[in-house]
Amino acid sequence: CNIATDTLVVGSWKKNISFWDECGRNTKRSQNIDQLPCSLSCSGETHGSFIIVSGSGGRSSIRNRDGNKIADLPKQDSWIWQSCLSLLGDRVAIGMDSGSIAMYSLSCPFIWCSDGYWMAWRKGTTDIIVNHGDRFGRIRFHGDVRRISMSGKVLAVKLPDKVFIYELGMDDNTRISSKCIHSFAMTRADDCFHLSSKELVVSKDDRLLLFSFEGNMLVECTLKSRVNCISAGVITKKGMASITVGLENGDVLNLLVRPTFPVDFELQRTHGVSEIIQSPNQAVFAVIDDERTLYVYHGSTRKIILSEKDVAGFVFHTSVSHFICYSRRGSLIIQTLDGYSASFQLQGKPVMFN
Image 1: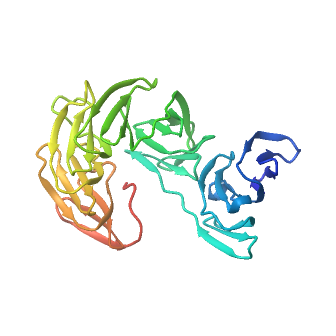
Image 2 (image 1 turned 90 degrees about the vertical axis):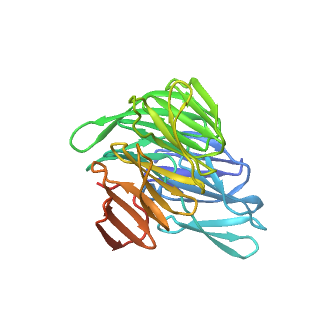
């Protein structure tokens, strides 16, 4: 099958798949697989560039454009002779030796991050699209992008075994440039991944770890409960760098990044925290809990300014903190914190408000 206009993917019963150009040259290293491939089905660049490999043992796997496995489809009771992707790349039909046909829906979780007017999101499983106003840029990786985080013009990207730190800029009037300024190995599993000023904050269960851009672990601490989310922190009295952490037990902690994550303030709540969103001036922050209830707090007094139930997503305006946007019950609401609002019938959740 053709993974791109100039690349042919070939499956061999030597249990590997290889990649060739139109002149018959091998373009990438062959990938060994754990089955005899009977069918290959490819999705083009538009839909994320991935490959469905099916064959012996009733097994099918989803692989990225380099042949690395992303996930397995449910195992069948006989060999699979044919698999076929839909035109949009969101469904796959599988034909078995037993004569039966199975159909599966495919979806790739939307991974994104933003800071001010900068925004980045995952395209397919291996690409990052960076946006600033009407300018775009693309960063390609040979592995699967697991997590991304952004602080100003710096972007951190987590692959299964490595972290890349990029500096973003403007090439001309239409393109965004990117330069890798640091990279280091990181194979540890993580729950949260956050870029804070000049350090990287990673959590696993109830542990919080701080890494330098060179990959050195600087600080490690244990909190009272599992960390569900991390965001940029509320402005502190001394102007020190901080992060805001939401815990499974419902607590919200604003922690100074140095020296050892000392607590700046603690907000005790009943339900677990699923998301924390900071306003551009870091004077107001929002919390969405496990019950999908939204609370907007004043940063210094911690008093509740606004609360709404059944909220699916929430963002502050990129430059005007008292303008907010959130989605609930099939509607998109644009509102000021003093009560003026407008509502639109629209499915989905907001990711940027500008």
